Length: 287
Image 1 (cartoon, helix red, strand yellow):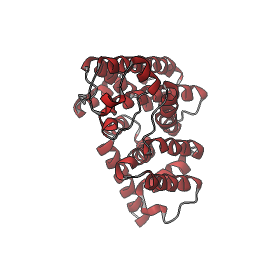
Image 2: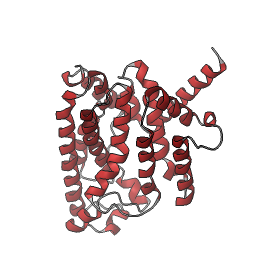
Image 3: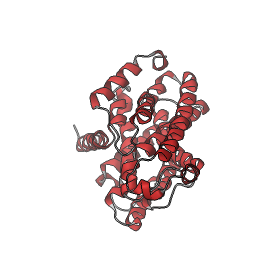
Image 4: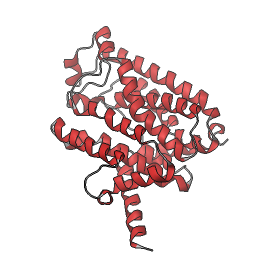
């Protein structure tokens, strides 16, 4: 094995471990994909993980903006320094080259993450859905391309799947966001329901907040149902990219029954794997 092969294997292993540690549901879903697709899909998932975690590593927006700009430069081919020194960057660029992934879509994911660096509120449901589309939906769409899903129908499924997943993540992230005094829940919905931001930032669950979360769950289910309805037209090979939708449906049910968004009950990894395995054997994902 050449030095380049060893380096590439190390980079792939690094990306897999990064996703496994910080986004287990997506990592678990790759276990049910064709072996040839796992490495490039994990490269995309690792890229997404790096973007999502920038806020965790900076105390001010400017260093975060600098990190995002580095990723923009990388995607545009203008990165400073050796790309090979960053395993996620190296794997991502290999996936882009081997699978002709649209760089504009990757840049769109980077640009969306500027919102994460600041404490500006999410003003409306429409704004939140656009954010979900630019992040989770793009990730579904790009991943599907690796498995031959390049049709307009795949884009439609990715759009609805990403919004459903993104709305769920906004609800599940409420404890962390509140601790940072960030607000991903739509402000207009909070105002109509009479939710006080002070209660959210104090981690207090109120009946008014439950109303808003219930509406977001309902919206997530609508998008999830639409994605599931359209999935039949997705090429058989690319369907596996959408396996996480089963986890989204289960989690939305859990959010609704839990009653306290500040005390989420995360599923066990074993249950996550079981749900994905069972779904992979269903008719919707076998043909």
